[in-house]
Length: 178
Image (tube, rainbow, N blue to C red):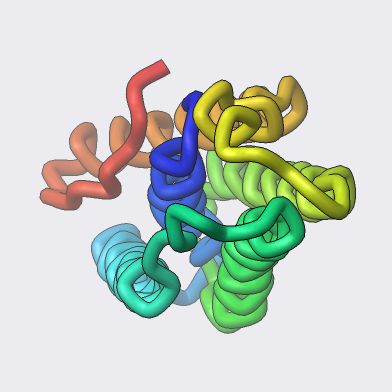
């Protein structure tokens, strides 16, 4: 994750992360396990569509963009990703997961919240001016807190996919491998 492509990759990871936010912390759910995974998949697909729309509408900064314009571009991209996840968290509160996913759900909710915090912190740390070299080197994107949040997210996502597979439920949550 070393360039503007990193921002796209981060947005994709955030999008993948959002499926987990579809789980409401708690348990005792009135949903069956299959219904739960259908809802997670729906939230993930909606989130992925939001990120795709953001990416398509945002484009790339011009080759002659000033340092201030680049900084604004990066900051706005990161903030938009965090806002998308916040919106997804809001929608997630409407889902009542069954007991079988209560623990993995808690893990994924914590990871997505950590990712939002890390994205907010990253956006806040972008200086008033940046260079293309900064972006190409991944100066702002190789962030320990963000990497840890996405690693936790991948672990929690894989745990949910395992539960689905163990219960013969076909779902592709697009988890990153850890």
